[in-house]
Image 1 (cartoon, rainbow, N blue to C red):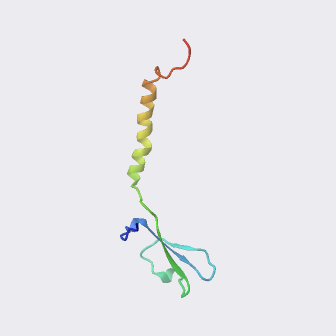
Image 2 (image 1 turned 180 degrees about the vertical axis):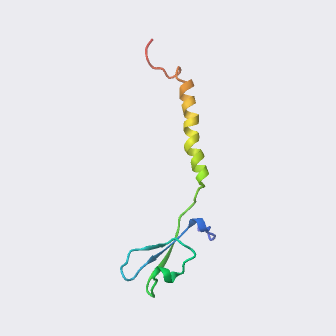
Image 3 (image 1 turned 45 degrees about the horizontal axis):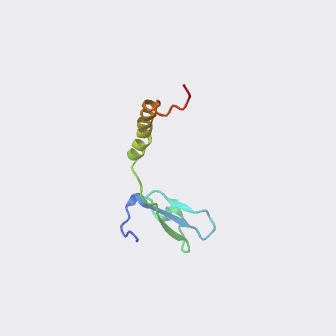
Length: 85
């Protein structure tokens, strides 16, 4: 299933130059194509970057794990103590 609506955060445009120059990624929306030296035979490509998550979500996932796992292991250490007494 193809999503017809694509948010700006998911878009990446690049130019494949016919002259053999390396691929140019269009990063600034305010600059015209002439700034990137686009010629007649060059190819403009679009790539859908997929679902993007917020940096706050990454932060919460990264730091909530140790805050939950450390106390879990610390308070259950008697249950997992395999040394002989």
